[in-house]
Image (cartoon, rainbow, N blue to C red; front, side, top):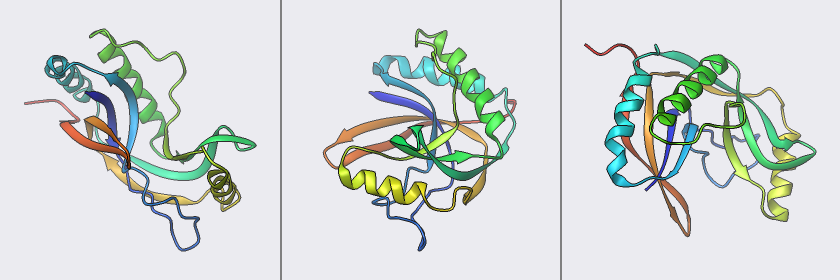
Length: 176
């Protein structure tokens, strides 16, 4: 199974003043991509993530601003940034990274940058779409929400794109 750890965020849909993305961006923000994982490891993984989730309290996240990796001048990925809650997401991603490392998953070698991927650039039309997004209102808000749980998610790659399903919801705060 192809797995990752995420949190829910507002869906980012193109507005009347925004370029079309080809549908909504995922309503989750990935904290850690785990990759191909044998099914027999899911129980231990869920237990480790439950321990991480208990260390955190719910917090607010606001999606704001559009940018690109590696840079707006040479975009490969267009993303929406995080303003409020960015520090908590960095701390949460670090705790997830350490928690799953204990199960044999490799540690990240780059700092976590909270963002929601809108799309990857693969074609000339993607470049035009990137130019349209990156030339729009740079600090636009895409909504906010309370982050209250970790999600263990599965990604099935299909010809029409990835289909994500939630395997486990791990609520923040101490268990009683």
